[in-house]
Image (tube, rainbow, N blue to C red; front, side, top):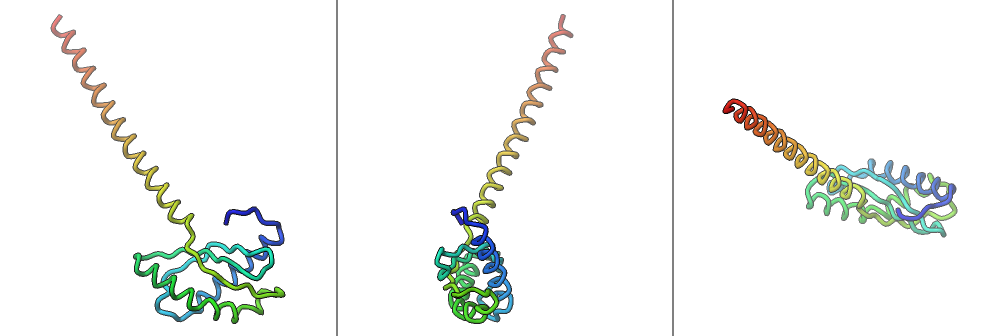
Length: 142
């Protein structure tokens, strides 16, 4: 999902995303887990489309879902061809959406950094408390 498509292509991409998402819900393949269709990118000739998806679950469940979607792609393409009202029904290719995993990774990094900041603040407060006590002890000695 790297290009900046024209307004018409954005509409076509969104239409394909919606139609495929509806079709995936209707699939009865037990390999397909909890899938979210996150986007679609259609080629300029409208004959090919890359459909991006995310899956919740273990690595095995993700692999099974990928196999199930690939196996069902021609069925989805055939069943939903009339819904798109396009001259050509694009050949579908399914890919895992990398932005989901990247977002999770960034969130984890930010959470780790926030935890380090809290630890640093606690250490600084402990040091300030110790310095204050040392200053009071020095004044008491005078």
